[in-house]
Image 1 (cartoon, rainbow, N blue to C red):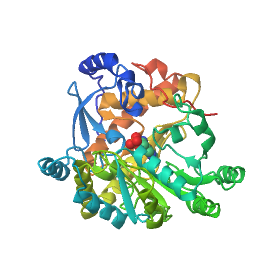
Image 2 (tube, protein in one colour):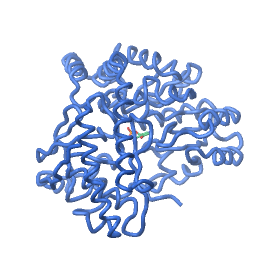
Image 3 (cartoon, helix red, strand yellow):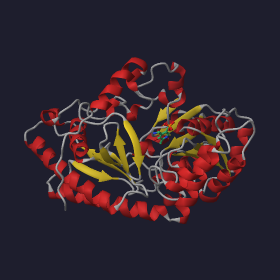
Image 4 (cartoon, helix red, strand yellow):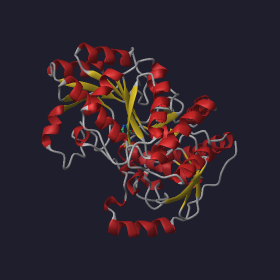
Length: 437
Ligand code: PMP
């Protein structure tokens, strides 16, 4: 395996942009997970200029292999020719119109073709549009107000009320949302028994980075239906990523409603709520309507993305490459004596690398920060989550594993000396949500 020299990169221009942003943009970011606090400050790039395939280039001209790919949307690759050309063709005809566009029908038909839960579809822009639309539809359909949720579902009041970043969210929302953990059926049973005939829907991310245990997803579905609630799968991340039919197709548990987003349009802003006709017809009456819902550039990108995913059997590739990266990482961890401290887990097209708390100066976030620092110095833009794209090459994976190996060497030294902080050349990564007790 090749070994790479890890060099601290110049981030001078990134820092200049940051200084300008501080004056005009609160927290300097539109997306907390992309903001400066999520990367080792002083080491990591802050502003990206462009992307090509699986690589991104920062404003200082440094090149990185990117696995976060804009937090998941870029499934084919940056500037993927088929998608770019389709967008340009549509651009010359118009972006968004006064009436509907046939692309709305065509893309809805494609989603119906591939998503097992879908007979009808409504579009949105962000994942939060889709989840919030699904929740409103479920409340309207059942005549109930309360929600059980297991996952992250976006920025709207109904969900954010359940988190620690709930400033500005009216208090009453808290009483309407109850959270449960993945694979914890007892928690969900308790929610139902304490809120009899009040739960409109159970919404969850059907795949976290854990395998569902003991038929968990089917049991959640049965429990929801037994209690007259709808089951909503939030497949904003996993839809069209794990396979053409998403996690529901993979585990063969079909929800009443599905939320799609991210990978749907290779980076263009598009999301969707889909479901059975009898439930989706409630959207005739529910208010779910916005100016850019049928915007054509995103729809044409979705059309071509879905066709490309299907024609090229992209998911076979994502599974194969993701597995090489995942196995490679776990083998390296074993070889370096880091087994049990770090792990790469999850379904191969989308994996998570975790570091476990090892003591006061070796807490999980400090360890992650140090590992990120070393990866970035080696040319890998590490965030913890690896989304495989159709543009990641064998060479990318081999280079990444070489960078991981070098980074693990530094981690070993930090662990031996009882401090990750001592090895950090910048400010460590911060948590977006405080840990709930
Ligand atoms: N659901 C899930 C599972 C998500 O991961 C996200 C975003 N990370 C959302 C919903 C919200 O999507 P958006 O940020 O596009 O509103």
